[in-house]
Structure formats: C-alpha cells, structure tokens
Length: 117
Image (cartoon, rainbow, N blue to C red; front, side, top):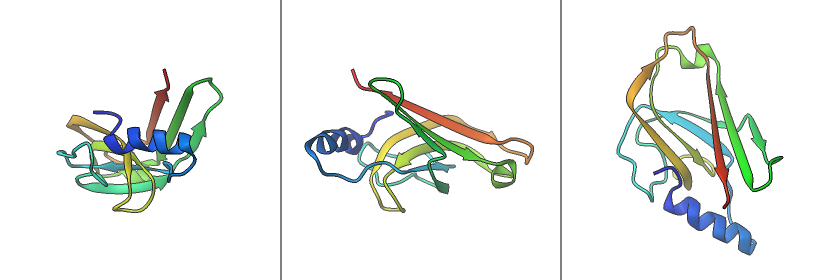
C-alpha cells in the first residue's frame, strides 16, 4: 500500500490548485496503518526532507536521512511521507515486516520515488 488514499486525493487537489503537500518523512517501529491514517502506528522520528528531486520528467523523489547517533538502538519497521506534524495527512506508507535493528554504527537514508504515468 505505498500511496495512501489521502495521497491519491492530494495529487488531484494539488492539480486543481489547493492542498497541503508532503514535507516530512517519518520512521517508526509499528505496523497496522490503514490507507486513510494520519500518521505511523508507532512513530520514532519525523524530519523535513533532506532533498526533493523533480529533475526527471513525471517523477519526484523524496529523501530522508538519519545519522548513526539518531538511529542508535532503534528498530525500524515502518516509514512514511506526511504533510506536517502528528495528526497531519500521510501520503505514502511502507511496512518492512521484519524489523531492522540499528546498533549505532549505521546511518539511514530513505528515498521514495513516485512516477506519474
């Protein structure tokens, strides 16, 4: 379920001229988010995008980075793209199934690309 119902609706509203747009990436340790959720199930961290790339025709890539200190001791199972603070609109959601445990020696970079076809 990569693109949520809110994300699909948001793209249509943006094309019509008015909506809030994604500006944040969040990571978490939960599961069970539905297509119309407003946040991750168990959010650990939320950041403004490190980069947003629109140089390729019909594609957008959002990037989120966390350093090894920020990730130390965390178990990552979910991440998403949101419009703002907790309770905002979630446009994209991914669940990894099995957790990835960070021991303080690994950084995290998430790149999410949408293509409009």
